Image (spheres, rainbow, N blue to C red):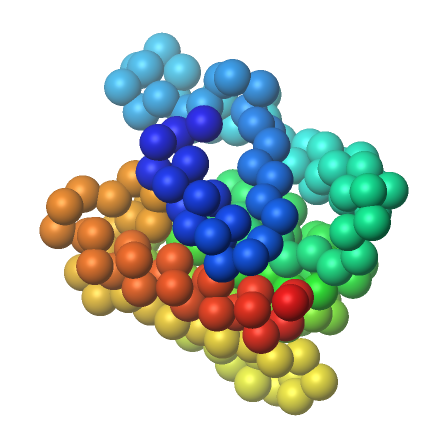
Length: 185
């Protein structure tokens, strides 16, 4: 697991949650420096559907251990899986951070509280798209929603942050934990 993601998992656990962070890439994370395998090729090997499908047995295993409630966080590609879990009410709350491949129609289908934490500089989920998510959530009073755009940050800032992004990353981490405290604990 990535060092920053591991530190974040530890933070969430310290807040009193049982944390599971599956390796949805099966040891094959995207490597921007690998020019022979650009993102479109890598994505073909790691479709977003597999993230959702791979989560179902994890949830079942946790339920069998007596864990009754779930929060799910999805970073980039993982945001789509969290949205799909929220559409089916398989979780009590979701947080998507610098999401990829999520549409306003996806957000319309979510039936659980969802927080969207985005970057100001993000071609994958630009602020205009995040505003559409906010409009969709505002039209759904039955589902609590929260959208926040972090100024001067770029896609990936919550887990692969540079020193200058650390304060924004820490704020996003805090927002995520507070969302789970509110809806999952």
